[in-house]
Length: 326
Image (cartoon, rainbow, N blue to C red; front, side):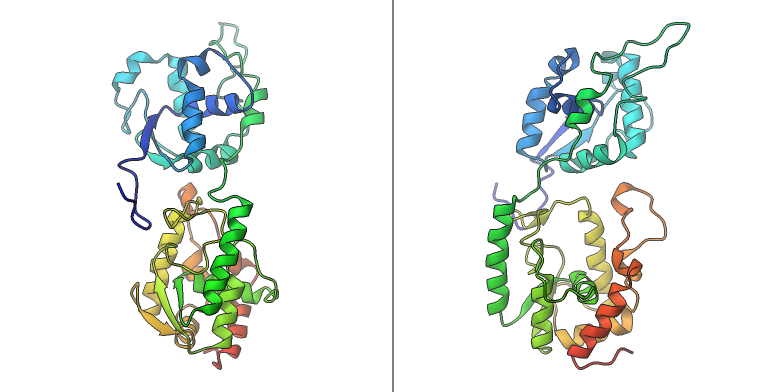
């Protein structure tokens, strides 16, 4: 099957996993071995995930999303069921949820620092449940880390060189819509002359300022965007961002389109776009921040609001484009 640009591979790149196995994988990565690691073939499972960090993992267990018993209920011990539920609670997920392996290990690294309350049990005068022989957490702590990035430093450097050359020679710019705001924040931080290794914000900003009437085509997603290629979270083979913010950034793109009154694929000059930004997005929190954080995917606030970089950058950029902030 030929992969289309930014296309979902959910139907061909997915497997099921029981939540507690995530802990076993970290213990294995940290050098641990025990009956569970052998029983659940954790070494084989880890190899599949390490080879393909963006494989979709569906969390299955003894219950469905409503708490109804599944066939796995009769294969598990009460200890297994308790661990699965505790892990789901800490990660803010439910049975049946699907996330990339990369996302799940980011969550583990963030929310599950050790095995306390998961694989260890307090002394009880009436007895205690059996503990895993790795329950002291030594191996888990060693192995608790995120999966490798989509691009290594050498690949990033090569993409930086090639994409900057393409941008310098281009007679028009193709950029995902919300990155117009990122460019603005970059300009407002007073480091406009220092290129970044992980994106092309400076190069795009220079292009706009040198030629305010250059055509700019706005796209939805990273596949054709001039900013994204050098990023460690950019997967070139799919033209896809695989960072934890991938869903949040999709919303930013569409919110930016709505605010500017354009649709994906439309082309305006840099001058006209920033005129509309000044009119319709005077505060970056309209696009990049949220009043409520109700899941891991939506928790991050953009620093452009906190450090006033957007306001300062907009003022500077409008000056270069021959516009006055309205």
